[in-house]
Image (cartoon, rainbow, N blue to C red):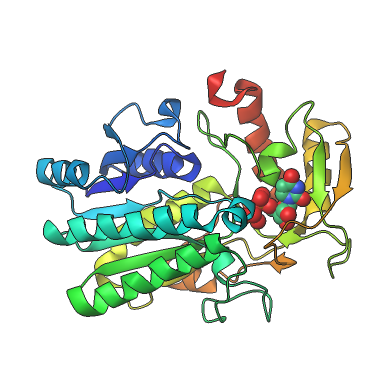
Length: 323
Ligand code: UDP
């Protein structure tokens, strides 16, 4: 059993990570500002602090009070489009406040961290599927802010003996029992295809893909969470530290809409729109490294099954956690 701090543990991915850690017998402390996260998504067991990642005195209080061995750092802003409009928000939170976390980890001698990064670090892929060795040239401040923090961790490893794992998530989707995706405003495709009365816009039908819409690699949120548990248990002895997490199969926006239509048993109306700034045409992972080194194997690789799990959650919570 490990004692871990989960930042962003009330968020979409963070809440499923917390639930999975508890199921595996680990003990958790959650730090979340609830700016994006939801109180209802917190685990019924576990200790929760509402607060900001950059709040030094709160961090000190947490590290002083609990025998924490590692941090799972998921707290971040994560909207590509918004990051292009307001880069300061992204560098301020995803980089500067992250540094406050690292400084306090050092102060308290905690040097193990699992960091949530993103496929957006790669930018427009030169080859597909993308391996971890692919060059990183992010097209937006969100991806860039994550890449900077990845590099910070690498220097902290060299200088201070930090042990880290960085996960580059592809497109998280799906839900487990009481935990699902609920952002305000919602900008992500997979929850939007399940909404009633919200007109869906397809951002670009002129990409160099078979149907003209962007292709992404959708991965079940439970599978992401399972990778975190594996990494936590192996942090000491890993040589490779950066892992893609995806299914290795790409689906276009139109294919996602079609899969959702099959799950819901009805057509999903959409209209063509402009390209969204900062969007690469295709992002598909090679997760060979995570499979080989962490022994990670996605349990729910089927797109329809992923969307069906999100649909079940949506039916239980039609207005998100508010319901
Ligand atoms: N997308 C879309 N309409 C929407 C939201 C998203 O066409 O209302 C597209 C978006 O351009 C991207 C894909 O769906 O190609 C997945 O976007 P999302 O925001 O869900 O995740 P991201 O790839 O930005 O992490």
